[in-house]
Image (tube, rainbow, N blue to C red; front, side, top):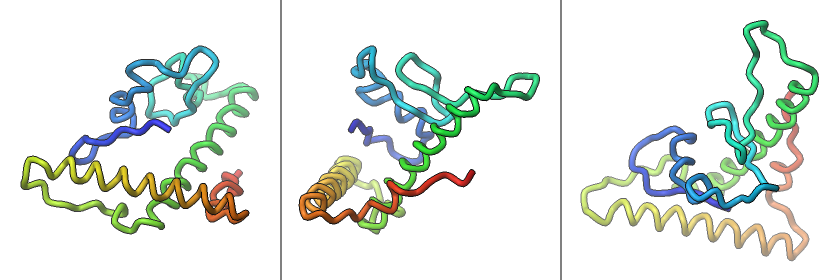
Length: 142
């Protein structure tokens, strides 16, 4: 998993993603890609939904791809929700940036939460339990 931390304040996901190693170094290779929502740029490695043409219509294949892409986006949103449920401090990460090292502290905090969350999922799977099964089984409303 690639993620980017370190941008102070609030920024758009599409902008933040452009600063990750995946976007900058194109590390996915020719046979892999990322599915993203319409805010992201369409790249060879980034598949975004089809937008309606001036005619206002999409082909059935385009609608089908958009439907499946929507399902992926729902899973991603549920993953973030599960993470924030486990770590309430991530709901609204308010920490005053008064010292030079404060932004680095926040980055370490989020990284630590991600590591512990992934360890929790790993050990639950080893025990045969699945705390994120609800997120995996969710279907988009259609």
